[in-house]
Image (tube, rainbow, N blue to C red; front, side, top):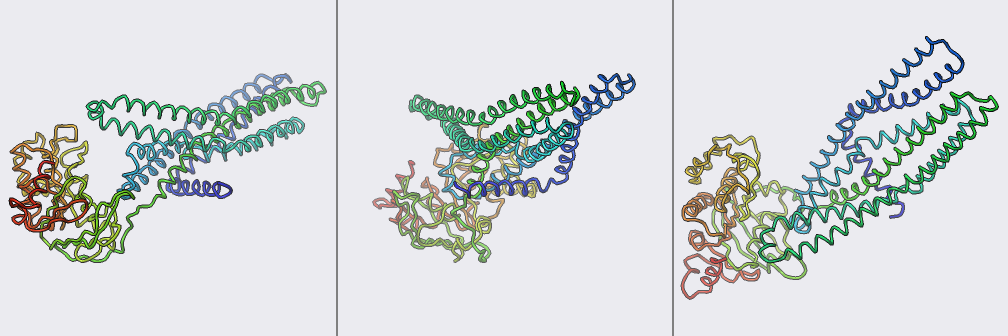
Length: 581
């Protein structure tokens, strides 16, 4: 806190404006012109009506009054048109800016390492990327323009009030100063409360996402009462945070209402005395009284903007915390790699996810270019971790991982991952066409390449059974089996033509027809490529060049499948146990 935090917040605000409003400078310029025109008309409309009142009381001719009334009507209508146009432009500016923030935050989250995503639930990140950014909409659409514009309007009101009558102008200026000081004193009171509110909302979103994704497990295990108890606690936390934020944001409105009431009473009292002495006209009193109300509305709008700004500041701080989170996996210098199939080496590798348990202990093995290695072992033995370290989902805690003789930490992430294809058990399908699911929305891959990849994996029969070919809509909810999902993942990898393949084969039981398709596709996918296979079936193990048996993060057996899969060997016991996993 102290003096550094406000400066930091100001730098954040300036950076946001420069980054996301700068490219829209033409629309911002139009918005500024519209707001200035609106301010001029807001000042002129009461002035013109006061003139009409004085003309009428002085017995002016009807023609003069009609002209004055028509000009007043034209200004009033013109102001409504300007307000509508300014609202349209400001909303457009706001949506373009906030969508830019959303896109940048989403891209940043995707660049963060797996340890970040392990500690942040998807629902929480959705609230950060969408909910917090939505709170910035007012900041981008109108805050800066409103505050600057309303400040100019306040200056214009006080100037014209002084020109009308300096005594009434002094009354109005005195209360304007009192109101401004009061607002200044309470500014920022709500920021911590709004920050707590945003976090409570993120926790609630994360809870909903987490619980709704495991509905069947909750019902089967009878954990529904526990989930409802957790929900009740989070709802209470959200209610308390929302109440505190609402109450703190009302301070400024309450102070302003008291100040405005006092100012209106003072203007009427002083104006009445001056009118009795013939020092002012009725039109002047009307003008200053109207300016008092206009000033009150202006201060109220500034206050409301400041309230929204406090919410936006809380969101801005949370967005900054996310945006300035740096990945533990850093970019390498980009050392060159040889072409073709690459060797893989784990040299004395150690790794742990947390302080409690060592996942890998001084593990060493190597895979020659074009060779296949199967990893087998019980759940928790470290099989999946090896794959994650190879494509740098995490960095090793000790030792080194090398491909093509180069430490993976010396490669750029794009360079490394362009040479590695990964097939996981949990294949993510998008609500899109078969084409988009296979190409991952890369429009540069032609259909004939997709069909050639499908054919080379022996999946032509399956492909021809799809009702609309590559345009067939698919997703996780449209009856795609685990085996079929892996077949799609094989095609994705083949289209990228990687030199190293990491395959975590599906452990679920497949029907015979799908299993034959998967076996043929695996053989084609691994052909001529260095491959690391997390095996769950003996049929897969027997076709590999070598097998590494893991236990508690250590290699306990290492050799050819025909050496390990023999009656009476420890390797057979491990493989048999894994077969049922």
